[in-house]
Length: 442
Image: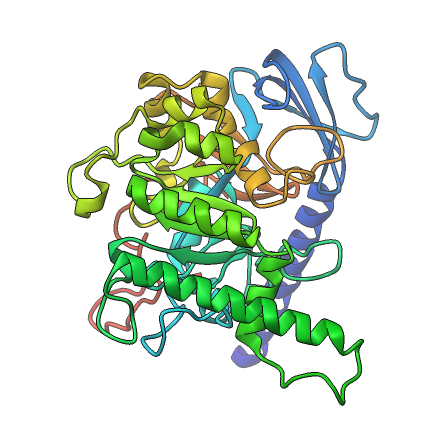
């Protein structure tokens, strides 16, 4: 009798949970209108008292209160006193795992970061707590080329497949991580000098170009096609412009080396970190290459980054360079990305440019600006609700939405834990301790 009651209770509870999950899903798919918030669209001027309407994961409409027709079936949500802006785009992150190339060679274009990612890593929860909705997950920078990156939507995930962003052809979206400077200088087979680093990169790109030409000459005849080479295929995607190179670099001379290589081989390029980018801002602008930069507001780090200064963003912006800010998480915690544009403004960057640097500029660097990065009708409903101005140290991310679905709610104690830190916020696995009461882990 007792066992039957337990089973019945369990089945009833399971059924209730399933119904509730379905109700939440239906509610999030239906039209919702957030009314009265200050809207920061990024693609246009700020709206002091606005309305944002979303339906089925997309932005339906936005504008000033009274100027937007709210669908009759929409659930209206009072957002007065709050600020709504696009979800943040992080162009350089390492959350979920570091797995990339190994010590067997300095250039490994066949390696894919998503084969090593753990979607249950607590870093993903901290990222949405910081308002991040899209990130470029990269392997490390200890190689000249350490592998293929992953552009990920921070949806609630059970497996890595839930985070994939696919392009129009159905391919998993991502770039190629490369680096120079001191990180990749080491014992053989790694290069020992900057000159040898550049020579190895040139050598591999020439091989990839020749491999691609051989494949093209076969006309698709399998009898004539050379043995498949995954590394050459990866570099071939770079040469064809289908995969953007995300290049870790710091010193001004290293930056100029990359610009020369890019000029020679014609690959699409985003410069990352560029600690001394402000020294060669005009050269970067002339090349038309965007920069994804980082701000570190505490001392320490590598010697080649000694000239990293907060004024970099403003100098690059004034020179005409497209600028994004990134976390390089764990270098900057994902929860603190909004500090970067705030410091950037204090050091001379425009407010508009700084806010664009954590939204639309990053989306453009990932080839995703048609879907994310700004509040515009037809784009994905990726947005965040803040308690105040995004550049104020006193403002908090209250809610984060990805494709219209809430992935973070600061009023939920479980989510708040990841926002503020504390016991359990960084524990991806909790060991069984027989002498302590076990906390629920989800």
